Image (cartoon, rainbow, N blue to C red; front, side, top):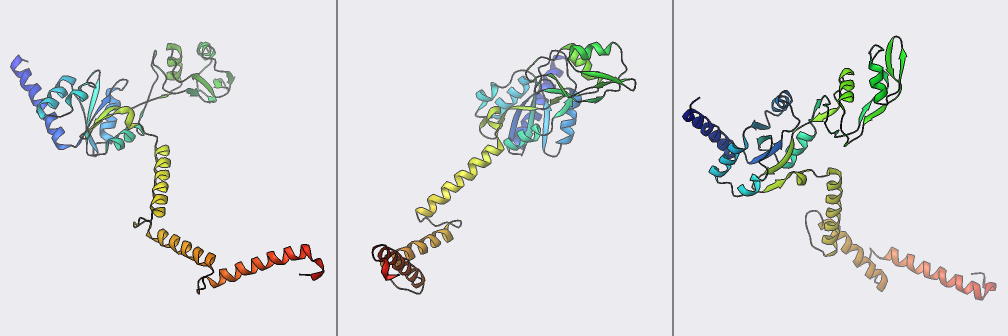
Length: 288
């Protein structure tokens, strides 16, 4: 391909990227590290109605961002390193993050890879014939037994702890067992919806967020009621509180109304019983 043709092809790609940036309000950069081409295709197919996922050179994305005049270009540029996929969507950035987190693809373990979680082999029949394979089970400290002519794993065993390096022997053994213990997905490094949102800020704890939101709503409701600030949510509570407070003042003042008479009689009866009890202590012969 001639230099001119190459430049024209690059410009065509840049124009396409600019078109996507104009079409979609949300733009995100996702880390492609550890993701195979077929796994990425699965995600593209799954999310085809929700977003467009493009793999492009960082330089072309940078050029598109510059030409379109993104105001936070310099901050976004910090994320344009290493292998990236670029996501264009109308979904909320936080929604995008959780969509990718919930739709990871199972992948075989590779030698030298860091385990993102504990890798556990479960007890049961492996279907493998006894032989040299037993030494690999032994090296991985997996208890085995021979039953019905095949190797059985005696009990559930953690073969690699989270954060540890997967050895070649363990990777080979997991492959022979037909296990794909690594969950691979697109990890959003950042998202942009008019403001740059770093990936770590997208990773919110939903349970904790719901708890804090509920707590904040409770405080706001309490403040509104006690400040007598009427809203759709608090007006009934304010009226009820005002009624209780007014009734309490009336009862305390001995002010007779149809609403207070019952409470006044109850208070009087209670005071009478208290007086009688005290009098009985001093003059038992009265039999009060």
